[in-house]
Length: 231
Image 1 (spheres, rainbow, N blue to C red):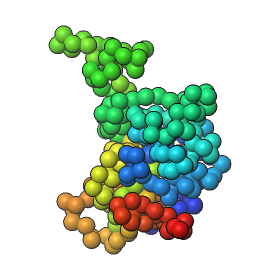
Image 2: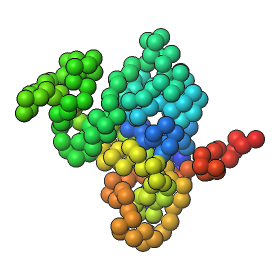
Image 3: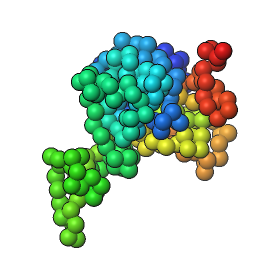
């Protein structure tokens, strides 16, 4: 059965209140087409796990102003003033997680590991309420694994089986997030025939990928733009 679906079809796999793992660092490696469709939907009370919430009116910032998000878990929200204002006004719950801790927590979620001990954030407000342990005379805190209902990720290319290759730094959180949800939906720039990739080139094997969506954005001047909205 083909994994390729239309950009509007993936919404049937997302329910109100779901936890979504969304790839991207800033806007790099962000599934912009999937986010656009989700922002235009009536899905609500979503928990978004991502490095950040995009920028004002861009990427996950569209979900924020659309009222789709209840809670955000991530590392760097101050690039989006709308997120700061929504949190200040009590309209958005935020759980700050150090960037390395976030990546490792998602990796653990995909690897079937319940959590890990880290020195990061020890002695700060981020450590409040977390289990502590002394290891070799030093204090560590327990960080639990992160798993999602659905992962929305972005890759450069997919073959018809669903094997993925990422675009340089666009790999960022996408590779680990592809392992840590019940359903994984990949937005890609290009779809090629199975066998096109050498096995060593594959960065996410097809067994992790449930559905593929061909993105509407095109890369120009190092940035992704919506050709339907160009001046």
